[in-house]
Length: 225
Image (cartoon, rainbow, N blue to C red; front, side, top):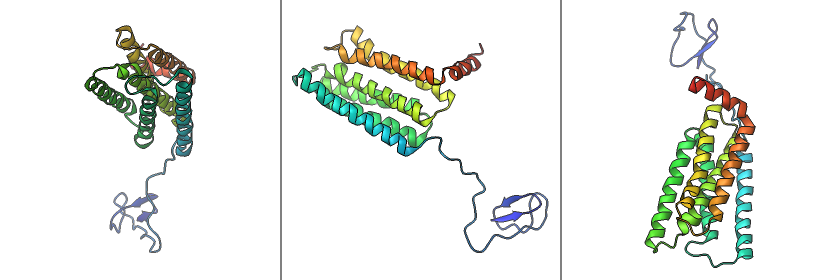
């Protein structure tokens, strides 16, 4: 890549004179490759740290599900708690990996993922004669796992304030969904839905404690209050 010493800029193409000041340009070095004119912006987070936290949380969830089944019995109808936990862990990995790769529209992608997988579970439950495992276990565990993934994303990846607001709203919606099914009488055991709702409240509190002042300032600007 050629360089204009007068303007202190690098010029792409076969220019012999600077297109800005018409001064002769310095030809590129014949030795190595041309340097990019764009600045290299490092990531605001460590991928290794994200994957480490995600792995530890996944192991804790799986071990916790094994412990729960040993303590409370294995006579769970339908899909079962253990396989529902595996479903939730898989969804959590998908949400965090989407955040690491895309770093934009993560809230919308998470909502689509939860909705799609939840509908598949409900349809599967319906085909099996509707034992009720989808709304009792699968949907609350799926929503709770997505909330954990959002917490990892917010805490480790240092997202912007605007995205912070979207994550807060999505966390509240994910926590409310199983509670709505619980109030409508569509679940057989209330504990998973109650845990998901409590986790959503804890997640919202942690998000607000982390950057609550900045979020309030951003909301006042957007709502013109």
